[in-house]
Image (cartoon, rainbow over all chains, first blue to last red; front, side, top):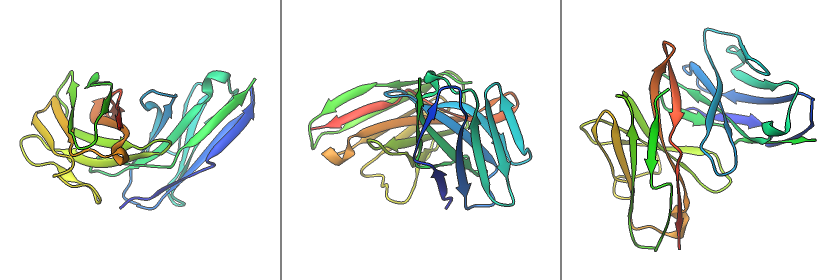
Length: 111
Length: 116
């Protein structure tokens, strides 16, 4: 099955700085890569996703890049704000629509 | 995106008992899944809920422990049977649904289960 590795496990950044989270996947058949933000006590919320036919996608302060050859994808958050503090999960999905998740990254934005 | 309603939102249960969690979607969806999130951990897929037939379980999960029903395209239940403290987790319903011409993946609000 698919194996997704996520780094780092924790990330502390100064407000206004950028945050980068990296994930690798093992199954070359995976074609959809969503990122979720989970605040304490809440459900994972889809914040951005990218498909295998695209190399980069941006939505305001959030961007995701995908390198299919190397089987890795990254989340970039620019101009971080305290409300960006949360746990972020990457995931990979094949055509069976099953998601395999990374272990998560706890992001803390220091004011 | 689809609106996913999951209940109960939380429960505290005695060991040895069972709890059934319901997931209702406001539109017909092809794919429904159940995930478990143990305390401080990531999400793990329990099974795919198949409409009108038996669920497909992932390695490490069995039907006797986690029976699942899906009588139609908008509703599914997950039962956690003969519970022990190790079953204390958040259980999440998920659907794959078309949004903007693409198939996205969304979650219900989750059921926080504590077994005492």
